[in-house]
Length: 123
Image (cartoon, rainbow, N blue to C red; front, side):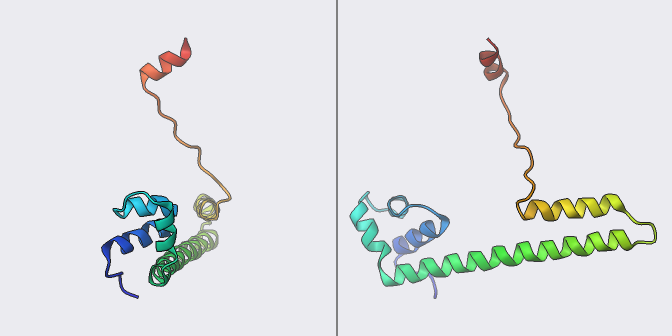
């Protein structure tokens, strides 16, 4: 299905597909806030089909990307272990990459504070 002819409807569909609420998407599409009208637009057959299409494409793209990267990392891990001189560090790095992609390992989040913020909390 091509983009919707109505630009506001297309923007609404894209925002819904990104995870916005109906009301948020309605306003972002350029309409005045209206829960009832947002709900009505969401039930529009063409808009609903467009949302499903956008979400479906994103899901396929994400799934293929993760699966492909995991496959490549596994191939690299196997190659590192089967080398004439096994490269255990490379194998561990590949295993950690797979674990991160699968959500099994989460990097520490970086916390940044200004000196002023630090001094304010230190007192």
